[in-house]
Image 1 (cartoon, rainbow, N blue to C red):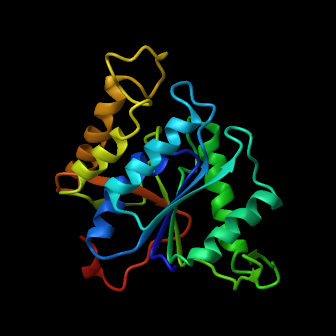
Image 2: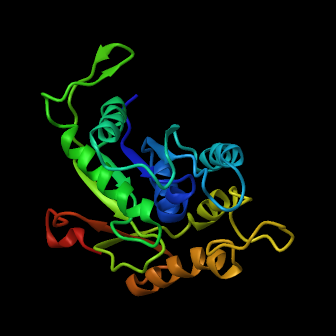
Length: 238
């Protein structure tokens, strides 16, 4: 199955938090989108790997993605080395996305920066013909995505561009809140974490509202790019 967009996150819920509304908008516009989680988030303070698995499935249904897979790398301990790169290369060649969305280049959680670099490196290496990978014993063709963009997470990194997601925040918020064990619940007996506060849950909305304010729309999501963002002409800019 060829995808238009492949969104990759170090943990289940990274993609929803970082670019859930953009994904919902692209799907509504007819694009085929998939999600890959690098780990099961098994070291998370709240919930379990099993509950995160179920929450990720529910979130995927809400967003309407075509496929979601988990590579089951070791949470917090995966590294950007050959063996991990090859697993990501296999996924990129399997789905042949034109665009890859991945973790923030620098963030509070160490897996976000690591995951960002791992995926970015794998996107480049996936285009090298002499790196051989197989899927179901069949040799895969090389494939390099046209674009790699990084969504914004905990830190308020200055975006290189923003996407107007007005009309799609309700879908994003439902997908985020599908992770019931992770976010604000006044009745939860689980330990508090930086993302379980009401302030964090509210930030999903107010951050998008603030980015939207800056570009003159209701809501927006921001991204960074590893290279210049090019347009055909000045009238492509909004």
